[in-house]
Image 1 (spheres, one colour):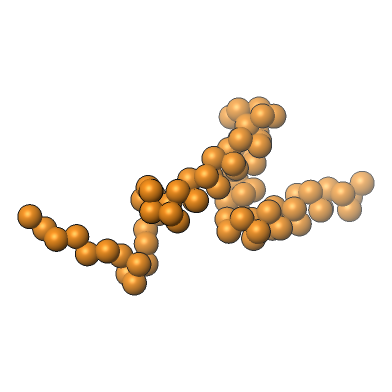
Image 2: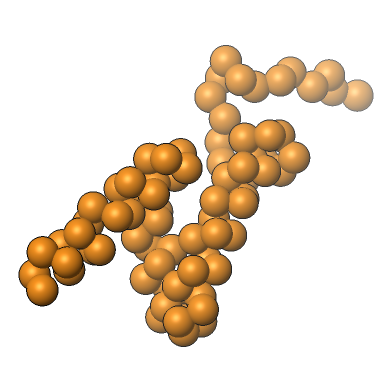
Length: 78
């Protein structure tokens, strides 16, 4: 019982987070807050929303997180 709990709580988010490029802490927080605010279904939907937002941010469709200076595009001022 204890081994299953450790795997589900600590190992699984690290595997999911690293394979999708999302920090494991963010994955755990998404699972926790999804469960807390939206119930059982939110436990799955909130991490999916976070991963979708990250994918859009990486593709340049939206700008949520700060980009590093070498990735910044200079926009001419009018």
